[in-house]
Length: 355
Image (cartoon, rainbow, N blue to C red; front, side, top):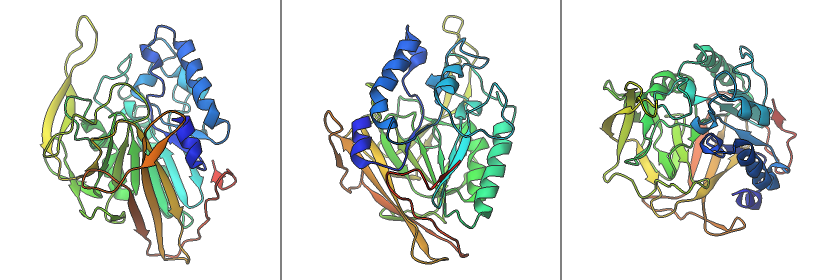
């Protein structure tokens, strides 16, 4: 994967959790070392900006299990964080794009790490997120608001993790309120994209409502697009598990801890998935690149062209996915109603990045 990233040579690289599965390893330090030996081939050239996943939660490693992750990554400090929560959520700006990285274990029902830590921030992350979104939407230099996180709002893979009601309860109303353009996440090990969604059905799973169903050009002023980009390298894939027609398993609660494993079993409710736009059943591994066109004049239309690359061999060998009913690239456009000053993102330099 790092060789594939270097073929594209982005300004920075977002990677969205479950970075090396150290919490499952008998030698966690060695697992992290192997991770860096591999990925420093790219990370030495450009920032790799992470989001914490459930497999970053390591039993006994700090008060809530994230001490290794917090030690290995130096991200922009945020107000309201403590020694326990430092570095778990943060934001930065690149050109006209505001990137917000969230730590979803704080709100998820799923018991996916070495310890169950739901609610660990006691509302601090949610309060910070709302302030961050309000500030971004009040900034005339920001055209795009993108969230990077691990667990998902949408997934049509059966017999896998599924979507989590906790995120739909806590984050999605804020995404709607402040018009988040794009959410990129992992957790499910496949590629999938939603239609722009806005609002939720009044049912047990808070099913997202598609605001538009056009597939080639997406107007994100109508709703938030969610992308599952989980083909980063794990040997356990989910692209062969798609429901037909599209449906989604949503974790709505957890049961009592198992006396042997001490894990809380998930309680699932299945829903139809009218929000599902595209998914790739043919390819297990890949990554996406995002090219920002800030437009030519204040108040005009800005665009992001998204290309999903299927990894086809060693040394980063990859090919762009071809448009089809099940997979392919797309263009997102974001019409703004007020003039905004834009800064073009320049490749191979971090000078436009503001932390």
